[in-house]
Image (cartoon, rainbow over all chains, first blue to last red; front, side, top):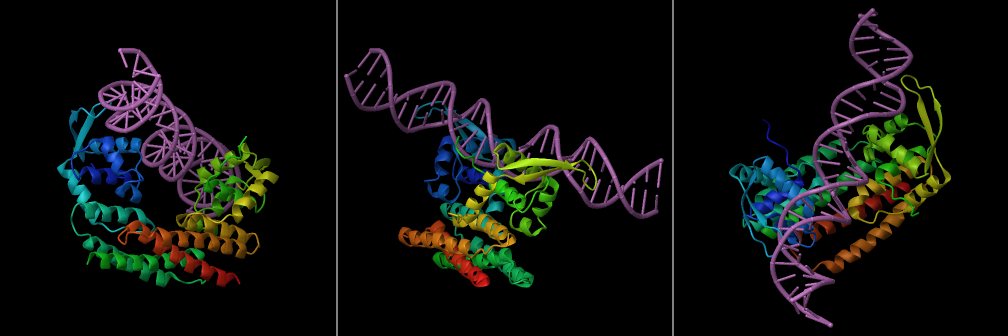
Length: 172
Length: 172
DNA sequence: ACCATGTAGTAGCAAAGAGAATATGCTGTG
DNA sequence: CACAGCATATTCTCTTTGCTACTACATGGT
């Protein structure tokens, strides 16, 4: 009985659901590529439903009722469970371990936290700390001057540091 | 009869095959995570064979012989066809359109070109030109100061520009 | 003789993504 | 008022992708 691993898609759906009981179609609108959240991380409609199924299976969400929609089949209203909310909150406070995950994971967490009304400053600072470790590890690893991959990593880590600084300024 | 789209994995295999007739196992060693190419873009063994199958189906490669290996089943030697080489060379000269594709696509092309003995300067400069367009587009789009996604893109584009400058210096 | 190791290729499952299909009520138009 | 189109809401299914594990064969050590 290990705790099931959730994909970013599933966390995104869980995150939207945590803003209040909702149904697949409404959630998918929040995660559409034109919406605020969807611009950060898009989840297409069928995937939202699959994620919801999975969240129910894992006990992180549950169906509470069905109600008539504006049209079409009945809406199935879901809400997060207590374990689901715990799991989400834990995820929301973890910084991304790899720079390549920042664009999606970190930004998604940041946006969800902001929408919930809390301050994202803790997350930004934790991410900054995690990045500093990456930076010093890169400094040590730098052996060959023509290692294109390491060079790219270095430039990117530095850009990410500047980005985090900007964000910290924005929220202080 | 449109020209079939190839995945990055398939281009990687095609690229290795273009260095000389070879067989799946040998190609997979080049694209292993510890090898020069594999550090840029890893392709696992079963995927190499699938890519080879697809390249044969699309007419970009062909099996030319089977020979006894050092051990185990016979090797199936493949080589690129004329259309395959044309297709590869076309791909190799195209810069990546999105900054997020640089780490993989551009670096893969760069490494393949370098290994072939040609100068990667043209690709670097073309990529630089493509990036300049991205940069000016970003400057115009910048409306809201707290748009985290745009801010991220901007920092990244700038870092990429610096990276390309470093590379250009390396090869001049 | 046996077992580990390295070579070479194959099988098959599970997740992820995209498109289309289905069901349903509302609205406008002739 | 019939009926086509449209928006809502969910489901189905196909394809692609990525792994893990397996078969098969030869060599070398104990």
